Image (cartoon, rainbow, N blue to C red; front, side):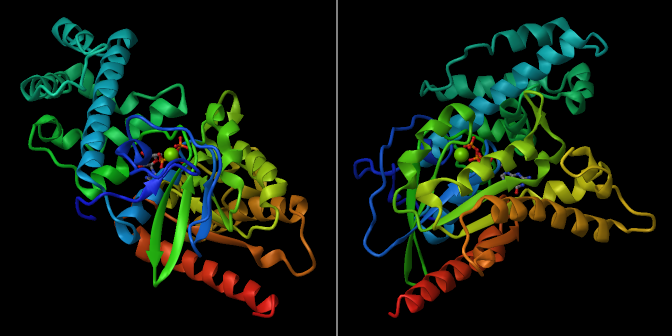
Length: 381
Ligand SMILES: Nc1nc2c(ncn2[C@@H]2O[C@H](COP(=O)(O)OP(=O)(O)OP(=O)(O)O)[C@@H](O)[C@H]2O)c(=O)[nH]1
Ligand SMILES: [Mg+2]
């Protein structure tokens, strides 16, 4: 993990300012209007629906090829991790108590109620430790333990928080102790939705890149245009885990495809090469062998497993279908010239993997550089 130095990540078009942990995963954020080009750097814009992994990718790049995270950013991350754990604890006990089929003690319910609206921001180490102990105690209640695997959120935002918190449950006391310093992995798996456009500058093999990140939740999409100017490459992130997730009665993968369709038709982005990252491959590989891709109405019966098809072959075929779904959308709606089809590239990724940058981003950045060199060559330079 990068050291404690300040990180030169800024709001797109905003004043020169150090990026707080807010913009990489927790706390307060600032508003941006337009993008400015930094020297010869190439601008890469991360787009996609909520919770697909855009900020996770930004954080990985900052840690590996940027300047890492400052002490202030780590402090903000600790606060955000604790807030997520409190939310999870409260929701879990409420679910277990309301369901009626779990034997949750009254004492646990009362303890959980004291968490409501609790102020975690106060710099009171003893109080924070007490909160940690309280949560650790309520999570040991037999009824709560039994209910835990059944807790499902009715919206994706809460579900992403629950999923993220699972990483911290084995070390709740540590997280709430005053000595706790989050590891890089802790910061990577921390879920905090992005509200405004942010950017960070990285250097790879002597080449400078500016990576811009936006908030994917519907209410934040209006601000995206502020990040479109001077974009060289779009990295469109899809969550493979979304193929059978439904939100507001709509399939999330199909919604992502609708968003992609809009993006490829957007005037300011029409000339940009697009890299499609099929992210959360880890979750997909585990899930698709049990819950077929045909659960996504876009694919139907053809995506059922064939007789005699093994797990590996089926998973590969399913991955191909998902990429084709996006490639065909690109071919149909992007303003392409003859021979332009190669402008869309596919990568399957796991952004939370410790080796994500060396495993996936190397290849992606090589593609960017090849494309940039080709366009210079085409321009006779
Ligand atoms: N298992 C798994 N989890 C992932 C992966 N990529 C991201 N996540 C988790 O998914 C959650 C959401 O990721 P974010 O990076 O916050 O998503 P985002 O696209 O920035 O979301 P918005 O800011 O709401 O637009 C986080 O808790 C991540 O740790 C992945 O490849 N595998
Ligand atoms: Mg984000």
